[in-house]
Structures are given as structure tokens and as C-alpha cells.
Image (cartoon, rainbow over all chains, first blue to last red; front, top):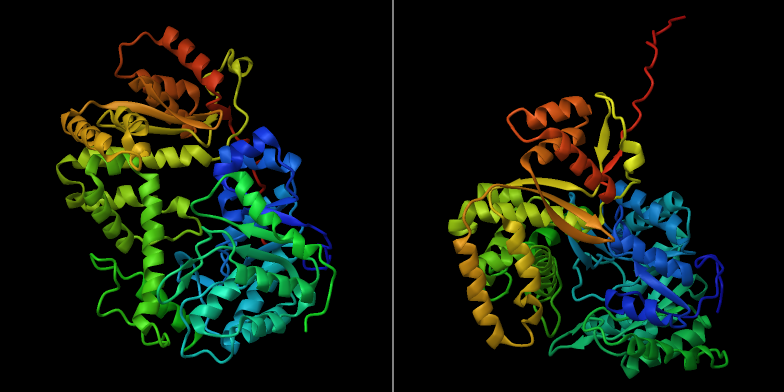
Length: 282
Length: 294
């Protein structure tokens, strides 16, 4: 797997998201999993079962932290209390890199608990990049930002989503958590070519890849993480791997979660792409 | 529009309460969102508004099963929507969403109907449950640390221990809810309906009966333990940093209970449960610093 400075020069393979319904199976069967991704906020507590469970996982497995509410794209300052708790957790997990979303979610101290879309403006790119740098400097760990699925676009936007992503990561000098399912979902919702998006991603900055399933409605697609990965997303993933090289890959499955074995088997479908000989995409 | 203006506008719009059919209100501003050939600006905004409301409502639904069972689904839903409209999340974690519910409900009794005080007690218990679940644990004082205590001995309570003085025995009700029909709802409505009636009856039959409760944690599981009034007063005083001599006198000042055997019994239980922690050392006195001009 390509090690780079955005994933702590690691060579992780295929991981799955650590979810409560699978705890018992994991502790009883100790399945061979290359790594688990945890949602940081679930463990940013002072004690009790969440941390005890995490410690048991850490005894046996490699863990990477993925956040959902740092909100790099919020116009106002990052939450200091959040950062302090995150740093405590980083020390506990020894995660080689840390990810969160290229989005916003809070304003004037009120939280939406959602991954809200960015207006693609130069002002937003500048603010977001500053927040990524501040977080990285405080946490002392490489950070990669994840492209989100979106369902709305703003009149004020000045560029495409992929141009905005590039603008942020260049200004912040940070990594990318490339979610190919999110690219697919947004491409359907906003009618753009997902391959044009993928081809514009600076490959040297990709620290990790996400794959997932989604739900299709009559007029839009929702990123629900409650289905297997569909073929067009696997095709995008194949294209991404050809461009980037074999990269740490994580399957997200967050709702209507099937058995551990089913989730793991779905994630391992990525193997055939990761093991294919590298070729430059045409 | 600046970034901050866009974000204020969008947050304001998506946090507007949904209509009864879960749609955004007719007056919600959406002009800052582009329409496309399938969805209007409002329809695109509505996806986010629904997502926001369903997420925060689900969170309260999970955190207050006792209150939900007491009030019934419809009344609980109305209470939740009104509470969240008045008290949106101020924390990065949904875990804290119910932190202001007791204070809010105290000012808005119409949302708890005829069992207002009972509902308040249930909210206090369920919030204490949340806190006991994941608050810090420190090394407790063992039996060897609790011999020959002088009158000036001080201790602290475990960070996860919560002490409650309640007007109703809501612990029984909450335990009944845990064992009750909630987990079986999806499996059989036929079983659920009679159970719900029985819970409503149980709620309405519940008479005021002041109780003192410790909400604590053992092996990562939250438990409720009834306390004697004197035991509650003693623990509360110790938690407030009072010396043990003062705390004991205060606990028994209106009581005729036999002190010695009760104290032996309680301290033995507390040390076994690890409820008491060493008092923090007070910082050394700082010498007065005089400003030197030179």
C-alpha cells in the first residue's frame, strides 16, 4: 500500500468500521482484520464501557480515528474542548493519521450534528485550510479530509467541488480521505462526471479511501451506508486504485448492519482491485 | 454572502421545526440554495432539515426511554420537538443533548401533563444514568483506607456517582421499562399494546414516595441503589468537600437512627463499591507577591 506523509507512512490494507453490534463477535472470535476505523466522538468520553471496549480492541488491532464533528469548514473557530478531548484519544489509540470531513456543521455554538455542504468559495477554502492546519498543529498528527455526499449547492459557489477540494488541501498541505461512494452520490445529485472528479484528485495526497452503499430515491440519492457497495461505485474504486495505487481502504456500514462476516466479506471484495497490477488509467 | 452569513442562514433554516407531515415550513428561507431540474431549493434544503430533525429526535428517543414510556409516543414526540426548538445542541456530542431537559421541562409543565413532578423525576434519573454510564472512574478508597478516620477526614465521590432526592420511586418504573416491551416493539404489536396500557396504569397509580437514590456503575453497567435519608445526606456532604465529622453530625441531626452500626454498614458498602476517592491535596499557600518597581 502506498505509504505517504498523510497516512503516517503506513501500509494498511482493508479495514472496516468498528460498530457496537459486532463487539461480541470480535471479542469471541478475534477475526483477522487489518484495521478498524473508529468514530472518534464515540470514545471522547471520560470513562465507562466505551473506553474499556476500545482498550480491548487496541490490545489486538490497529485503529484509525475518523471524526464527524470537528467541522473544519465552519466559519468560526474550532472548538478547543473538542480538540483537547481528541488529543487525549489520539494518545490512547496511537492512530497514525486522523480524518474528518470537508464540511461544516456548527455556527454560533449551535451544532447540527450533520455533515453540511460547503459553499465552494475562495473565502471558505481559506478558512477551512486554516482550521485543518490549526488542528494538525495542535494534535501533532497527519490529517486527511474527506469529501462528503451533498444534496444542495449554493448560489455563491465560485468553483466545482473538486476544485474546492484541491484548493483546501493545497492551502492546508493535508491529505485526502477519498470517499468514492460520496463522489458517486454527489455526481448523481448534481449531475457531474465522477471520473472528471477522480481524475482531478492529487494522487500523492490520498491517505485513505472509503467505500459504502447508499439509498436511491426518485429524485436524489442519499448516503445511508446501509447497503452493499454497488457496481458503479466499485468501478470508480477500480479507477481510483489504478490512478493512486493500492491504498488503505475502509468499508462503512452504519445502518441496518448485517453480521460481522457479511460486512467483512463485502469489504474484502476490494482485494481484487488492490491486488491487480498497477496500470495507468487511460 | 460571506461564509458566516451562508452558514447562519442555512442553520436557521434547517433547524426550523418541520410541519406535522415532516416538511419544511412554507416560510423557511431557501433562496440561497440552487434548484436543479428535479428539486426546488426548498426540496433540497428539506433533505437537510429532515436529516437534522430525525437525528436529534432519535437521540432523545434513545436517551429517555422511561419518559417516553410514561408520556406515550405522541406526547413524547411533541415534547422533544418543542425542547429541541428551544434548546438546540450546544455540544459536539449528541450525548449531551438532554442536559437541559430538566430545567426546560420545569418551565414548560404543559408538556408533561398531569404527571409533571413524576416526569421531572424521570428526566433527572435518566440524565443521571447517561452521566453514570461514561463519566470518569478513579481509584476508590478500600477498607484499609477507611479505618480510624479522624473528624477532619475528607473524601470525594467517584466522578460517575450521582445522588438524587426524588419525590417518586421512578427507579422501579425505569427498570420496568428496561425489561418491558420496548425491545419487542418491532416483533409484535399484539403483545405491545396490553403492555403499554399496563405501563400507563402503573404510571398513573404511582403515589408520591420520597426516595434517595445513588446512580452508579459497576463493571460498566449502570445500577440504581436506594439510600437512607441519612446516608444520602452524608454522601452529599462528603461530595461537597465537608469533613467527615461535620458530615456525620449533619446527616443525623434530625434522625434517631443508631449511628454506629449504620456507619459501619455504609462505609463497608461504599468501600466495596469504590464510591469514595481520596480528597485532592489543596495547593500550597502562595507567598504574597508584591510588585517591585524598579
